[in-house]
Length: 242
Image 1 (cartoon, rainbow, N blue to C red):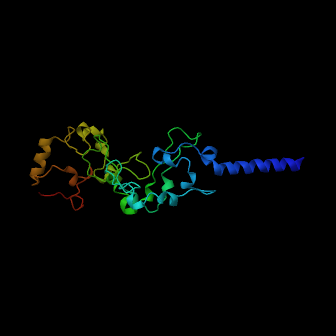
Image 2: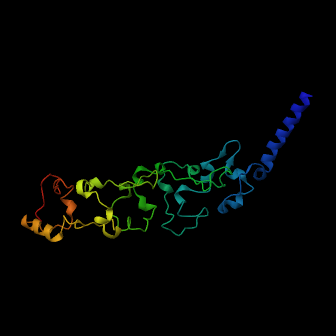
C-alpha cells in the first residue's frame, strides 16, 4: 500500500514539474508582465534560467547598458527627458534585478511596496551629482539654492533632512528664534540680520562705518556666531575693511 502511495505521489510531482515547463505562465508566473514586456508572456525562459530564476545577463541580451536611456532595444533614439535621464552607464555593477522587477509584488506584500534605488550602485564621483537625475522641489526651501544637496540630504533617503546651521552661523544665546525672523517670507536662500530690535539697520551701518567697513551686505562672512567676529580668513576678532 505504501509503495503504491509513493508511486502515485512521484507521478503527481513529475506531472507538476512537467507542466511547469510546458505551461510556465499558467503554473508558476506571479502575474502579468509589465506592458513593455507583454510580448514575452508565454516565454518565461527569455528572462529566467530553469531552477536559477531571472538573471541580469538575460536582461542585457536585449538591453545594452550603453544604450539604456538613449535608445530602444531596436536602436531607435529616445527623446531626452529631465525626468528619466540616462544614468545606467554610471553604475558600478550591472545588477538589473537590484531595481527592476517585471512582475507585480507577491500578494502578501505591503500595499505600495516599491523597489528603492540603492545609490551605492553609482560610481562615487556620481553620487553627489543629484541634479543629474533629480529636479529640485518647487518650494521656498529649494528654489534658488546654490548649496549641494548633500548639505541637507543623504543618498540613503531624501527624508529626514538635516542642515548644519553652525557651518554658517551658530544659533545660540539670543539667536534661537523662528526661522522666519532671519529668512523673511520663508525665503531660505536669503537672510537678514535686521529682524529684531538689537540689530537696527541704521545703528549697524553707523557702527561699521566707524570702523571703516562699507560692505555689510553679507553679515555671516565676518560674523559666524554671537560671541565674536570671524573674518574671511577665519581669525577671531578680525573684520574686513572693505
